[in-house]
Image: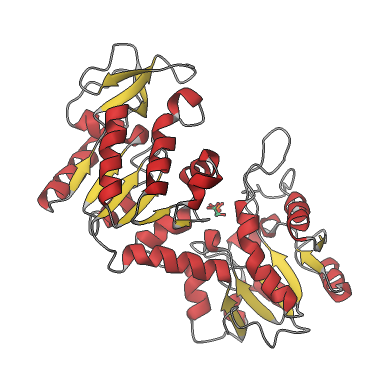
Length: 399
Ligand code: 3PG
């Protein structure tokens, strides 16, 4: 069964695993980016309109054992209701009698959103007993939680393997289609742009990209480590000293394989991360007492030229401290250039996807795909197995 063929779902209880793990404002608890909720709506509508009873389930945050404060899915239910007009009912637990009752009582136009799956430690342990309790609630399983398919957790791994009727939702299908295009014979030239704070977070993806790309642009604080490995004095900039040998290895691999590795030639510098203004400086002459907090105008131009020439572009990680206006230009300009580029453009989730949205709706529209998955999109590109996808495909059903 594929969720695209929703006929035959009438009257059935359909469990849709969504990824409503949305960012929340630390002070107010309000949702700061509802993209993951919006992106789940097509599948929810399809199943609702087929006359099924919809049961949504998600994790939110990483609750500590026994702690639930601030991590209820209630705000997500509220937002979903505002966006769709459906009445969203939230039982106080995801298993047991309370969801059973809510599901039994569901009428047309009403949805059941289970409480945070991670309030039970068994979820992250991929516990089969817990999965069986979830299975009791439904007749059909749909996975639309792309952002969580890299986790071997009960609701995405053990549960589908218990269900005879299971399918990939529309969002999961869309994500896999777009991201697979970057892995299976991508159109050349292929340019990847990586940023973010640490080289250590990106080692696997860099290794994988070195097998496919023609050009790799590196910005963000991780570029500092590469520049330092070339012997440049980055002054007070953030550098991972222990990753200097790794940076050298990556640079020599790129050279051996004829891959163009573009590092920033200039930066926007300031004396601290709390500064509200920065100055451009060449990476060969970073002034004493300052640190690089964004890529500079000449680097934007170089990266931009590569992006404009590319037939395939993948981007993950901001180019600087983009939360501060003085250091946001590199990230927003890269977003703008990619948005207008003619190649197939994909941005991985997390900070860079958030930056694209912040840059404005017209910028976001220009991308071919903005992934809802952070870790999941990277693991797919790295060629790792995705337990959630494997569980859907696996032929056997455990009894
Ligand atoms: C994400 O935000 O990447 C997913 O929702 C997975 O969340 P996790 O990293 O806490 O497992």
